Amino acid sequence: MSNQDMEKQDAGVTITAENDAAQPVADARERILVIKLSALGDVILAMGPFAAIRAAHPDAHITVLTTRPYVDLIKASGYFDSIAIDRRPKLTQPREVLALRRFLRNGGFDRVYDLQTSDRSGFYYKLFWPSPKPEWSGIARGCSHPHANPQRDSMHSIDRTAEQLFDAGIKDVPLPQITGPDIDLERFGIRSPFVLICPGGAPHRPAKRWPAERFGLLAKKLADYRLTPVLIGTDKEGDVLGKIDQMCPKARNLMGRTGFLEIASLAARSVLAIGNDTGPMHIAAAAGAPSIVLFSRESDPKLSAPRGLSKNAVSIVRESDLRQLTVNRVMDEVRLRLNLTD
Image 1 (cartoon, one colour):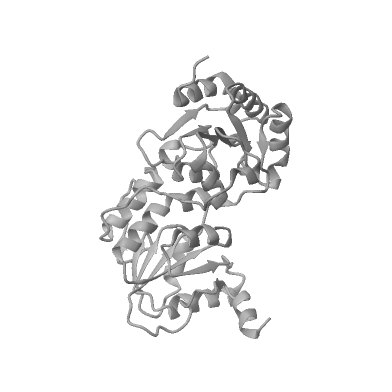
Image 2: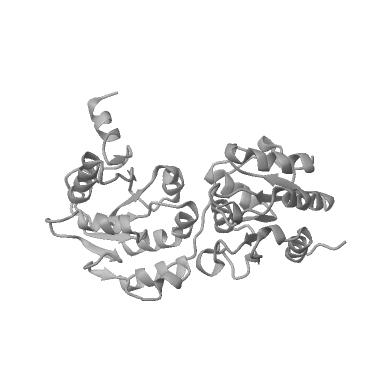
């Protein structure tokens, strides 16, 4: 490993191989920075704004500042010339904070679109001091293009970001859309038609999860209609996926075998996607899958529900306590979406 590579890995921002934004500016192109750090669902919802920013600055060099889990997903979008990985340094890590500051100040950015609009990204605005600050779209105090709507926190993420960009001069923001690579269903042992099932979710928010036993019963009912239940999730969701798999032997368990882009590819080929309010369901909707998303009182669909590519692409089934949500109620929505008859 070269000393240069070691320096890149030990900085507050890790620069990808194609990224030159940390170097002094050598050309006259407009330079744009887009900030979107997390989480998965929010990154997916930002795909429309990403497209709008690229369309508004077709000849600019555009860098996105994100976190490591989303690099491949964002790279595949094709909207950015370079990607910088934010290691989210703490104030107790002054060396890393100074490296992040150098990245921001040396990037020669003419404009920054802060799509994270958090306390952290607002702090990044302050890191330009005492140098002149670039044009900045966001909520940082004193920025050139503030999104000052006092109701912004009660708006859906898509509507909020579209309004923020409108205030910065970008009028047309499309819905989020993701296209995965061509995929061989036989490689995964999947028979069509199939339904994509996303039974997992953030481990620290168990109230957002429908019980695994209910997903298992749902999978059995789907199989009765000769629909293949396809289960996706990480190794950390092995208990949930394993329980569903045991209850429905006709299900296909793809635990740990699908990255974000593979999920998009599978969703595009599915007849329906069903799951909790979790990031993969945002991917499924953005990939064009008709979707049913299960919400509890832990989250508000008016603020963060997936939005598909057409008006009625996503159905919301909400129960204050998901333990009270019956399989029959969800299956009724499945029959309606797929026009199934007994």
